[in-house]
Length: 138
Image (cartoon, rainbow, N blue to C red; front, side, top):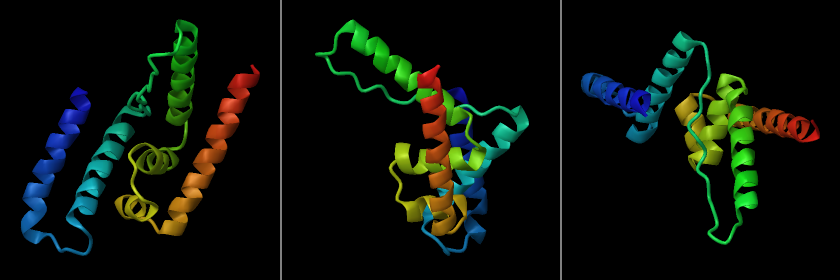
């Protein structure tokens, strides 16, 4: 949480400093997302480890404790599998599947074409599926 706050603060500081020279080639929100994503990439490169926020657990009050435990284990398995994806695949998957951005928005944020984003998503999903199936088999 503290790193997210630091990145958020740094994003807005950089945006504030760059605002006088900003050229509106894209929506401001897309540009701001790109600044934040680049800062996240910088932090990850410095640490050389990939971390993901905890996926939200959607619990049903009618679930029994065994079902809740099973769901929690599945969430952890997905988090772990995503954290082992290559950086750009994890970013594409996070932007589209977890944050709800359209493919066009995610492509703008990542500064790639929509076709390149679709390729990243396909590879991420394929790798994620294989990883989860491998875990389930062991």
